[in-house]
Amino acid sequence: MRFGVVVFPGANCDHDCHYVLDTVLGQDVGYVWHGTTSVSGYDCLVLPGGFAYGDYLRTGAIARFSPVMKAVEKFADDGGYVLGICNGFQILCEAGLLPGAMMRNTGLKFICKFVDIRVETTSTPWTSAAAKGEVLSIPIAHNEGNYQVDTMTLEDMKRHGQVVFRYCSPDGALRSESNPNGATEAIAGVCNREGNVLGMMPHPERASEAELGSSDGLVVWRSLLAHCGATV
Amino acid sequence: MAEARVYITLKEGILDPQGKTVLRALKSLGYDEVEDLRVGKYMELKLKGDDKAALESRLGEMSEKLLANPIIEDYRMEVEV
Image (cartoon, rainbow over all chains, first blue to last red):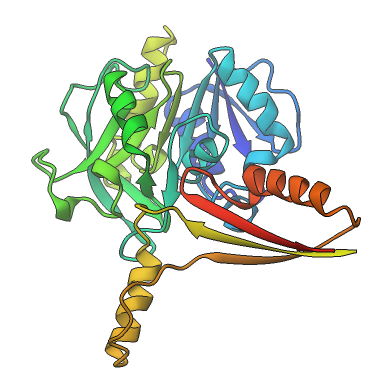
């Protein structure tokens, strides 16, 4: 499988994603510059974390209009796999590729720590290798991860299995204290109706090697690779 | 040349963590009369042209496309020609 890691000015997790895909998972991976207007030749595009365009105005608001995004939108519409992590998730929301929007964390603090998230569905290409209800330990690092979506859209998302991850306690229970940022219904990750576009606030690329404290993030990459019949 | 102002506010029903914190700070300073407070954004623009209706229409477009996020925010604007 060929992966492309999109590099926006201000992205800071692009190299981490590249390293995990290349060195840990042995995949073919290249960088995709934000100024390019073609993403041909890729099977999956990763929008990495960071602070694209300084997060000015709103997170992702400017990045969403960078030249590469038209190509990313077309790529997603054609069924290409797109993974937005943290800032990448925020960009996908602003671009309308995923429902909802991000607000400041309720505690107004930038939170950088390991959290537990529960796999809500295994019917997506991104979670097919996980078990339903499985708890993953993956770090978050954000100031705007307070996911907001109107009730009607949320009900529609739930009907279509688009809520992919929720923040939870280590035992998998949903408790208010296990929701780090105030996100609606403790949502940590969502996909589009077709399932080929996933956005998640936790960083799977920071939890892809046991030496770094957790390799739970691997299941996201491995699910996709298995779904696409790629060899690891 | 026209001058325009755009006011961006959070939609009703969207929690405003920043506003809540500022509200608490005011209360802790003794301003007990403050019942609610929400933080928004204010932008000043200089626009070329003097056709007010046309400028308003363009500014509305800009607001919906970029300046505000219609999922969480409302906007209103003033254009002075």
